[in-house]
Image (cartoon, rainbow, N blue to C red; front, side, top):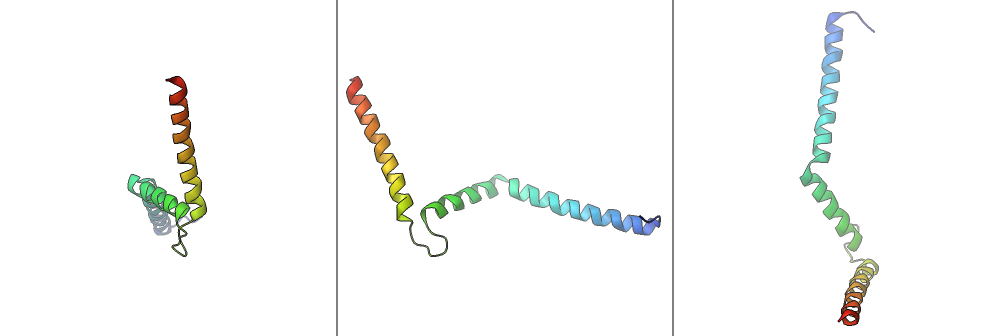
Length: 82
């Protein structure tokens, strides 16, 4: 550690700049627009291969199967209760 005032001022300024950069990065990562964009990209990547652009039919079929199953369950429950 140095006692030279100009060296201390320079060190303090460098620390401030690093902290300002870190705060800017955190604000960007936590902004709602960035979070929504990340979630949309994640959802798209689940159904479309990011490298090839080809649809991932296995994931699409799983989702369609789940939706059909839930709808069928609602229909059965509705018929039983009426």
